[in-house]
Length: 455
Ligand SMILES: *[C@@H]1O[C@H](CO)[C@@H](O)[C@H](O)[C@H]1NC(C)=O
Ligand SMILES: *[C@@H]1O[C@H](CO)[C@@H](O)[C@H](O)[C@H]1NC(C)=O
Ligand SMILES: *[C@@H]1O[C@H](CO)[C@@H](O)[C@H](O)[C@H]1NC(C)=O
Ligand SMILES: *[C@@H]1O[C@H](CO)[C@@H](O)[C@H](O)[C@H]1NC(C)=O
Image (tube, rainbow, N blue to C red; front, side, top):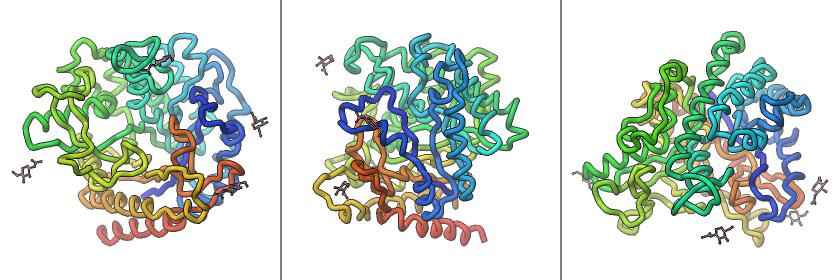
């Protein structure tokens, strides 16, 4: 059993720092330091999840040299972690790609990115794979496809029609093209790992999806089918091709020719194309049919025609939090993991993210800010739910809390605090919140619960 804590080294190429009027470059260069590794050690974690910046290793992708300063930067971090007995758990791309690839051929929209990503992965396995044994190829490709190419809220801000406010894009087509290239880029990296490195280096490679748990809004067969569609259009979209070599049938039925096609060769490359499924899991929602019934605000046919509700008869699905999308629904963890177990033949699962945020409040004293009882309760209930799934036979290999430190939360900037440690964004000082102090106890309890079960 592995236990981990996560924090992410973020790269802000596209997220406009001016909006937050803070000196982000200064914060970033100091984001993870020796002091932070000491914090991990104090919490008793045995792994740390972070991402490598593709552009920092290959500023021009495969069309230029490896940046050795970037290699040395990550070597130092990896060695410092291992020195403390903490396994590095590395993500190759977390939302950003080198600008060069966007300029040259449109990034994820071009099949050319498959060999570029393969080359980048090869360089990472070559330089770091002697010490890194856990690899995530792409973090939340389903979020990149939807936010980058359907809603246009994330880079490269492409969308069309009523989906968003973009100058270019095609919301009903491009998400599927970008996703197709991400799936095949993942497959390129995995193929390279398996043929050139895995035997010698002995690590595992997977992918992390953003996964909400979906409950049918009612018992009707329409809502049940809509719920299956939601799962397929949101996460099986990526997992089915990678594991079975084809898109989910709900997507094939609805999208028809709008769904790109895998060649025979692609399918061969894809089958069982991962060693673990990474689940970023936070919350749940109800799903109501909009294919057979009319909905006022349902999602379009290209998204699967359903309505995603966070409440029923005025009652929210779980306790609301400071993030408008995040409701506390711990039973969703067990249900999601059991669903993945059944659908994907008990492929190993790693929870690669789980957590909640506080809103930044400038009037809070440090004492108020570190008293995060709701986070302790959240992690406690989600870990219990995860333990249930494991007792029922799910092959779960690890859990990462999001996040070690208060971080730059994408479009929310520094206004939401997901950390187990409070960061003062003026002087960058870190202070353990209650949850950081309690984490050791939470994971020890979790492990002993499971040990009691197996003995
Ligand atoms: C941001 O911080 C860096 C490093 O401390 C400093 O060199 C730079 O001048 C700062 N930039 C601004 C706009 O304050
Ligand atoms: C869409 O973007 C344009 C250009 O940035 C802006 O002027 C306009 O207000 C935006 N419209 C909406 C509905 O956000
Ligand atoms: C579903 O059906 C069961 C048994 O018939 C019933 O107890 C339950 O309340 C129903 N749930 C919903 C959401 O309608
Ligand atoms: C953050 O640091 C600044 C500068 O040292 C200090 O004035 C402020 O009180 C600190 N904020 C908190 C919440 O500790």
